[in-house]
Length: 124
Image 1 (cartoon, one colour):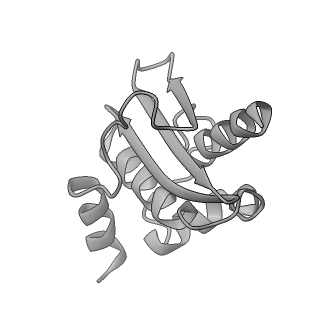
Image 2 (image 1 turned 30 degrees about the vertical axis):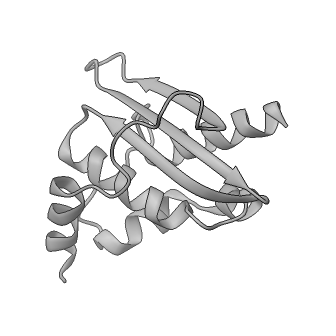
C-alpha cells in the first residue's frame, strides 16, 4: 500500500475510532484547536502497565484523523514508558512525508498521546 493509500485508508477507515463507555477508560483527555474549533478526544485503558485499548474521536481534518488513527495503532500494546518514547516522526513515518508535521496544532497526535499518558501517571 502506498503512503497516499495509507493516509486515505486511515482517514476514511480510522482504527480505534469512537468513544469508550463511561467509566471504562482509565484516562480521558480532550483537546480543542482554538483557531479552527476542531476537537479531539482520547481514552485509554491500561492493564499490567501496557496500553490495552485506546479510542479516539475527532471532528478534525482528514490528516488529523489519519494521524490519530496511526498513533493508536502504534501505541496499543506498548508499556507506558515505551509509549512516552514515541515521537511525531514515528507516527508520521509510514505516511512518507505526505502529512505535514503539525507541531503547532493542538490536535497533534503526539501532543494528545503525551497528555493522556501524563494524566494517567497523575492518577497512579
